[in-house]
Image 1: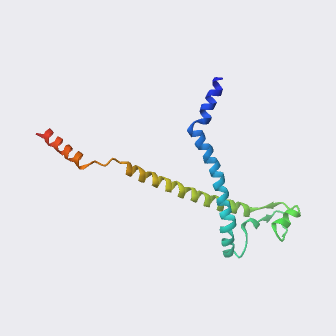
Image 2: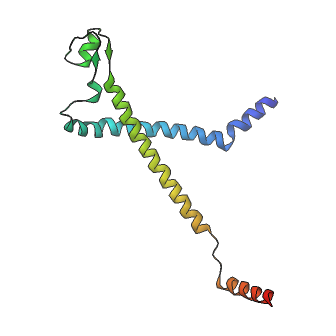
Image 3: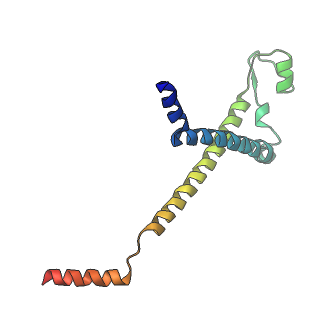
Length: 138
C-alpha cells in the first residue's frame, strides 16, 4: 500500500504533470511545425531548387536510374533516400528555432515580471533612511 501512495504522490506532483503536459503540447507543436515545413516552406524552397522535392532525392545502390523514388521502390531497388534525411534536418532546424524563440520570449517575459516585482521605495522611506543614517553618523 505504501508503494501505491508513493506512486500516487510522484504521478500527481507538479513536475510529473508538467512534464506530461509538455510532452503532449510538444507533440502537437511538432505536427504544426512539420506541416509548416512540408506544406508551406518546402514548396517555396522547391521554386529555388528547380522544383526538386527533397523527399524525392535518392541514390540507387544497384547503379540503375529510375524515374522516381516510387518507381525505384516498386522495382525493389536498394536505395539510400538521403532526401528524407535532408527533410528531417530542415524540420529539426525550424522546430529548434521556434522552440528557441518561444523560450526566449518566456525568459524575457519573466525578466520583465521580476523587474516589475522589485519593490519600489517610497519617498517617505528614502527620507526616513536618510534621517536614520544622519543620526547614526552623529
